[in-house]
Image (tube, rainbow, N blue to C red):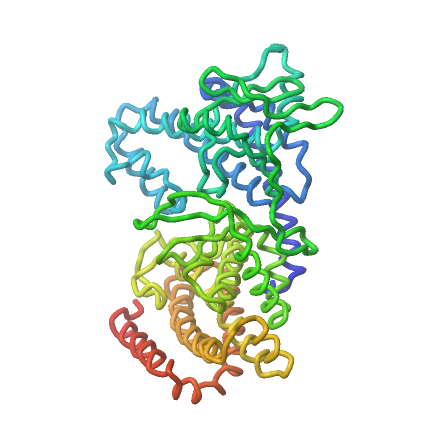
Length: 516
């Protein structure tokens, strides 16, 4: 295994597609055979899910939207199974305690814990009602998303049913902050194509709090809002939408498909999602400029980006840098408003590196038996983190160190200096890139020592995990050999004091948090 070998990653992606396809088939089979009563209770259209499974192309099984939909269906099955156990148990204390532990280890990215344990305590007496509510919500969401993924397939499925009357599907057409979809739109398929409701329908939805129903017939879908029906789409000899088409904004085409720019996710003062808004044209210009720099300075990193990132969402959030979800591979939320041009380049690579490691983690187990203990100091967060967090940070910031080394080397060439200036980057940006490279080398070196200890002494890393850490160590050594020549000039620059403080902090941290 070579971490940055695109052929290796392409093979992993192919395996991932097959595994997601197999998971969807298994989930449908399980709901049909083992949870038929619960499927009826939560009104799950399993036959429709199976029809969608047959309609998706192999490539779409690695798409962030399809993967998120399948993962939600998988979570629903898990919670339905827990719900059955809770119904059968008189004493629910043990199940509640176990479920809270599961949330910390497996569902740390979701808000499930807030729904089932809103007070942070087990509360066994309320476990059944809260789990039921969670299952109802997930069932509604996966059903609505299935219709939007394949509306024509939904019509065909309705046409095949014995009951010929319209199938009514509750839907929430408010802005969706996880998929970053605008309010009053139906996001169709996997490419980012949307259809926006007419103003009259938007007004009705506003009065109804965004709640409506899809009325699905064999050749059309209408929207029911407060007892009023509005035409949405017709499937006759040709497809005819009554809503306005919003085509996805494509940043560039790659061998693995288009890289698209999504709507803008806006956060409020409390660092929580506030709204989803259309993205301004100048954001796309800045994004394309950043992508062109990566392509010129680090062609191999550009290949990784083309393979692993498929949609970028501008993030307008003070104090929030960038983030992504394990269950939405290829979807990166990037702060394009509070960060400068060099930061944008760094953030694109950073989130792509999370997708990179998550793809590897879907194939191989890299760590075990750590029990999610927060015992390792993070040089980036300045706090204790579990092994999972340290592994992710070490991986992504190693990629960041490589990026800064490549930017430094590129800017030393005649063509690179010209392109650096054309991209709007300054001599100060170059010095900061070199400072960041040296800073990341020291931070990553610190955490590699902890990861080596976790593997060799604590036995928390698997053989594959040890192999990954070894390759990161090798890559960092290569970066360090090339970056040390900038040590003197950075130390004498305006960034010198910050670099010395950073190194002193690492020395203090090592003295405080000694290896066990």
